[in-house]
Length: 307
Image 1 (cartoon, one colour):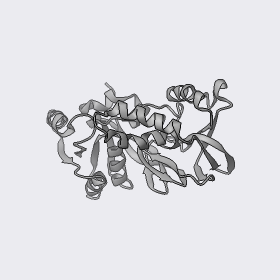
Image 2 (image 1 turned 90 degrees about the vertical axis):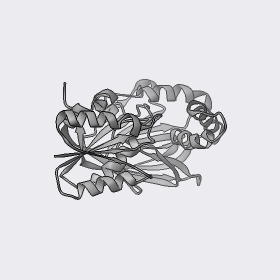
Image 3 (image 1 turned 120 degrees about the horizontal axis):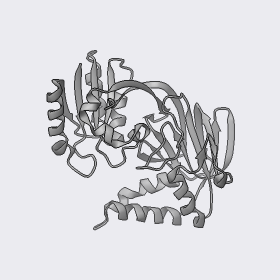
Image 4 (image 1 turned 30 degrees about the vertical axis):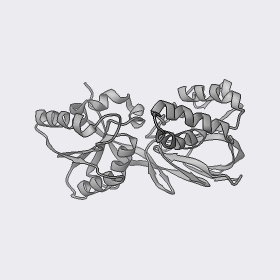
């Protein structure tokens, strides 16, 4: 079995190729493993590298060393190849996938990952491609969409850019008039945001679907109704903690604000003529709608071996 590490050298706050590569070499040599290290050079390169390795037909373990975007690319490249399994080495700023399986630390243990177990998980298929964790739209996506613009300003770091984007988003028009088809149910109304969830968290820790299961063949759909600006901070605070969902239902404090469904397919149409910002595994763009469906047990991933 070969172990191939696909490293995004610009992921996260540090130079991953400089800090992680020596650790990979040490772990692989200590296990006597057949290994290779490849560096991505441009967006989408992870897809190409993963596909090249998977298409050899050999049993191979591909380790996506970066953030959720790098993991998404390697999953896409390996998809459809039963000989390939994908591990996530979380070196990015968000690392939301690993929150579904115990958090970052076990996945950063390279020896445990190389000795780990392969399991199958669901994926989300959209009109744009594949998402592993969550697709969202509305206020939260709008904030993420605005951050790069503010980061280009002098002396405007990550936290400052995030805060400025929040202010801009809240001061602008709030909510969209949407038509949502959840399997066969039609829901029409004014919504602040929505999340179509395979996993529990996104955006660096917003727990949109605290009870989501990446192996149940279903998507957790969460809709947050349009609310006034004064109430936004309180509602978002509870949403971030996952307090809005309890035991498969909307929690009592949020019953007039949130809606929750478990579905196989979702179609969203904007009815007010204003584009809505959509994110898929952190990649943002403006659209007039979104469609998503679950692909049950469609990806083979690695979970860390138990100590």
